[in-house]
Length: 327
Image 1 (tube, one colour):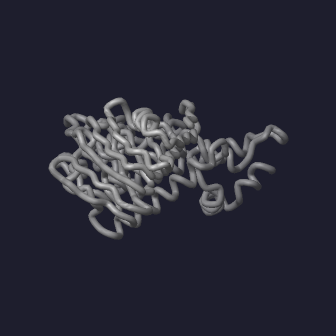
Image 2: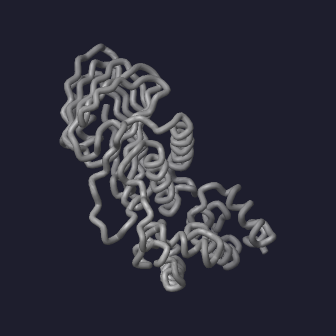
Image 3: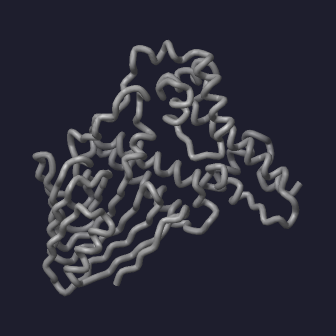
């Protein structure tokens, strides 16, 4: 059975279940792109594929109970897999590996073809659009972007793998609240950048930002003024550090240095404070009976967890957000 829907701003749940090898091939083409070619041998047991679609990233839960062979043209996105049961093999860029329970792996280089095989395996998978990588790793707006490449498909350490798994658990908790207050564009965008940053920190790659000679010289008051002006005029948009740096006509590292030197904080902490002030203004303006809730306001301004929002609000303003709302 095939159940599908189109992403329209909120996370969308899609589920496929089939015991037919031909339909399984169609499932993979729909979910991973036209360049995926699949050969499957029926075992009488189904292939199950469940996906949360959050626009620029997908969270997948896959159970493969048939003998599956996949050949893929360059996917143009990043796929990270984590088997819970069973094993799968993959081959790309001269690397041939077997991945099993408790392990993590990048499936293929995003711009190179690859192949994989599996039978009787259950795994979690995260698919990231490369635009998310650009949003967290574009160090120099004037430098051409090289293709993202991994020197190893495995994590740099067990600690890094654990942190990646915790990030994915957090992402799942947010996107599974479909239709709830936490599923706002700012929250979902922040989760996407968090997944991309965690992935780049977990697997060795060529996107790690290096300090350029001009970064310290660029960390001057003019850079700070441009960054603050952009933050304050775009606080309601889904922006991150790279967007702020582009608006300030410099690099993310130079922006960070400017904020630390002159304000003793970071650009993203400043952005959170501006959004907190705007949330307070919205709570203060709310009229009785207009449907305004603390959770809804928090999510609109990028705060996914109402409890953490309340703690930060209390520490900043000396009162809980509910008191501001009902005063």
